[in-house]
Length: 74
Length: 140
Image (cartoon, rainbow over all chains, first blue to last red; front, side, top):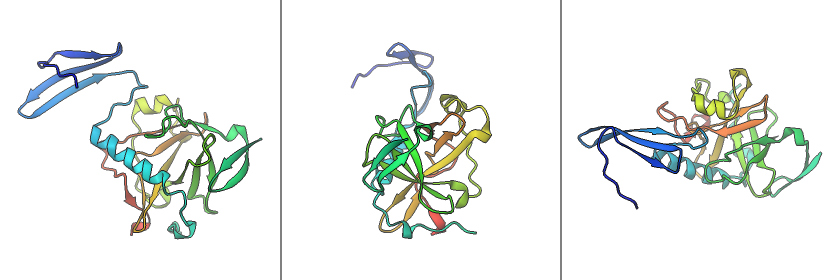
């Protein structure tokens, strides 16, 4: 892993079009701004991981017995 | 018409015009970009979101308003733009369904948003809106 030190207000560039800026450092909290093309999705890693896991599980649900599905309330 | 091979559903005839493009795929399945929706019940609540290019890849999806009537997520502007969505009336929300021995849940955190006017879709991440990736369907 590349490790760099940056101060508030300083940035780094990933590739040619993603810019990550440290906006504020306060105690153990760092606020980060990201400028990226809209084709690059930016998400908190824990949310990304949660959705990856949920998608894997959904893909693995293909063999379901449809009779188990709850009916919509009428 | 073309043929769709499906491990789950067998061989189906589909209309090319019904193909939904997902330019970024689904998280973890980024290389599958073309899907069709195939009804899975007669009430219109459940469908299969089936890959056109992978007979093994299908997701059961649910139209959320049947079970989560208060679910009205705000689709971030950049996400809407990515599927050329300009009119909210063109947006169809679908939530991926996960099934385990114990429960059946819908992913409200990362719904698929379909621009039905353009047949373009995208899995949208709704961070900070209080939604969960595994919300029990049917209130169980």
